[in-house]
Amino acid sequence: MINALMKLFIKNTDKFSENELRIKYSVFAGALGIFCNLFLFILKFAVGSIMSSIAIVSDAFNNLSDMGSSLVSLIGAKLSGKKPDREHPFGHGRLEYISSLIVSFIIILVGFELFKSSFRQIIYPEDIQLSPILLLILCISIPVKFWMFAYNRYIGEKIGSGTLIAAAKDSINDVVATGAVIFCAIIGRFIDFQPLDGIVGAAVSLIIMYSGFVISRDTIGVLLGTVPEKRLIDGIQKMVLDAPEVVGVHDLIVHDYGPGRVLASVHAEVSDDCNIVEIHEVIDDLEKRIESELGVHMVVHMDPISVSCEQTVAMREVVRSVVKEIDPKMNIHDFRMTNGANTINLIFDIEVSPEVADIDGLKTEVIQKLKAVDERFNVIIKVDFIYD
Image (tube, rainbow, N blue to C red; front, side, top):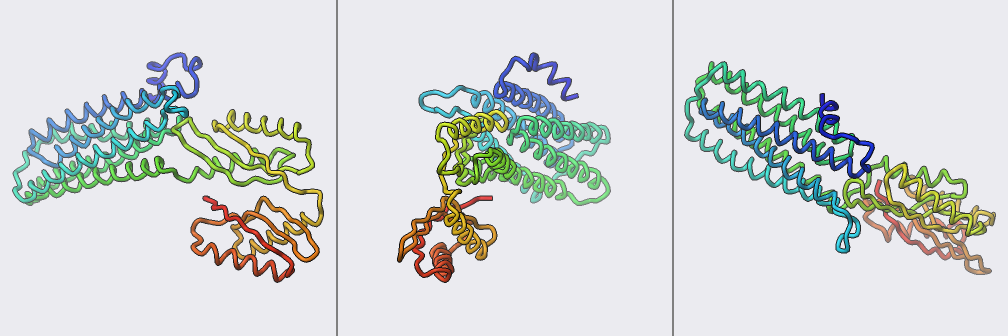
């Protein structure tokens, strides 16, 4: 059904760029969310008011907050599609993340207000006017929310939208909350415990606030800068290493400027005796293929290393084995060696997890182990943190 609706409202998809199509899908999902949540709000608010149930009214306002979320997401999607300008050379993609943050604050505020109302209902309970017909009408919201979960997840995964994935999770929360409200209404018919409605309303409001907290936490993480997906890291590294001229890769950095606007840089190790013109063509081709296949604007930096000097290659492996003996997850790169009569300089970068607390102690341990191999070694280490 969702594919049929998308074909009905989004025509001539082959004429749009990937980013334009992504915005249209986001706007479509947002508009559909507004319609569905407005329908559910009116339905539940009417039923809750007639039955004098704070739990049902709380659930209704939960849908109203979801409608506001969809509206903000829709506006955010439209604004994020603005082209780069002088003040924002990397585009406006992060506006989508900011819109998600605003949505999370709205959800938390609505949940808090409903919690206060539910608490008053617990202290000063009122009788609920139960009606089987009204309960049946209320049950309609569950399949609607299941459908909203399905289409938000489908479109969210299709275009890689964290906002829509969050909306899908929120829809499942709504199914649980509505189910609890219906259960409360039915149980309340057989159990004379007036505060039950307020208790369930409070529980629903806590679910609302928690969902808002989760969305804000994830969005703030993206805005601050999070570790890229392992799939993306592995994909970039594999494509770089697949080039026959590249013998190693390190220092991969990824910058996320919003969905579809990912910039990255990486160091590719190449032989120091290669033809610079030929290797430049290889690097150019790598950058174009990564952008075409992975959607990442890539900058590849060439790092020349010695691959023909047997002594340097052998010593690099000695250093690597010493480092991995300390921690198998660690590695080295940018290895250089200057050989003198009394002093042999070993210069290299060591890749370390940010969880390692004592960096100086680690350096000392590496130096001591290498000096045990040869006292002439003068070891110069630079630490690079790896996030995987």
